[in-house]
Image 1 (cartoon, one colour):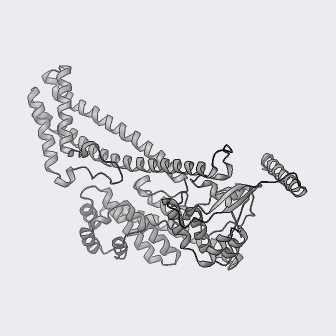
Image 2: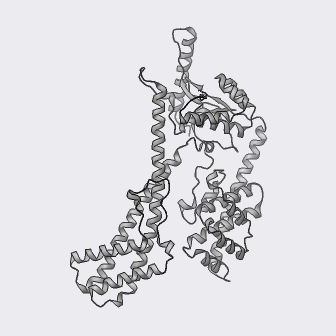
Image 3: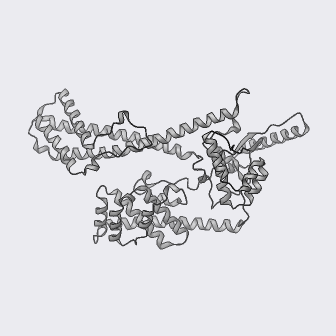
Length: 492
């Protein structure tokens, strides 16, 4: 089964098939410079994503603390007697009261991610309480400058803090918009690190090579959205297309152990979470939903439903805030509490979506197996007229770090595949690929891309010979046919 090599056009790597340089410029050096630029842009984008996620986390807590401060100030309004100094004292006391109700470790912003550059002088962020007292000082100074009357001071202070809250909230909205744009951009790219997601092992496109449909990249799960990105009810959408074996959403061993606790055994679940609070994360929820999907594909209905129950249990505990674990188990074990109905309906609805999707995929796999079990092969071929696939084996003695990494990948191949690549013949490589299963061949093709072994080049045709003239005529006819097909009106 020929594989459409044009899929590699979607890779975020420099494709030397369409690079035109001056004859005096070394083409390979030019392409390497282009690759370096792409790597730099990718690293910058990923660093921006980490930075914005970190700022989002801090702003979320700061917004909560400012909101709580405003509520506390409103509740103490009767304590102020038209005294400007009294208004400031009550404001400061409200900040201290809110700080007293928080554990010291929760009052500190999260540690700065190691991947981000250190701030000037390695300066650490102050505690949230310090931020609030600083805010209160700024507000009082602003009120002094405005010469607010003593009888209006307290109301004006609350309004001024509210304006600061609006600014932080607006900033957070802009931050989330920028973060969403960067994550979408990152999601559109297929890098050498994620090339395995460009192939769906349960479905191989049998469309003839060279057709329009072949130019699309078939992702395993193009519409997957994690609960962290889509909100508290997103798990039902995430699992609808959860046939994704991305290692980044694998549940940890502790979470896998948690999934094996029976759904109704809340004492055991609560005890486990008290010993393993680290699994109360969005990643672990996603991982358990993937476990549920895999179990359903294997016909393990009861275990799949149990995994869904435990996944949503983690999510509900997170959604309920700082004391979420205690609140959840108190409500779920209180007879007749309405929270039980909400939770169980969510579990059942999510499980049904997984079950429906699993049935569809298993049917699809059964049809494909009956159509060509044991005869599918992965074969490489260029589909664009006038292009050829070149094979380049990474040199063994290179001092370049990227070349050394590429050589390590090459050395991991079987002796037969290494010999085939060393011949430089695409036919020999296809013979070696033809002896492998589709999954094994797809994995190798992905590694070819990581090591830069395959590249597309424009074919040079000598039009002064009869053979070259015939080739040129054939290419022109192919190009004309493609143009006519694209311009043809839609039959519908």
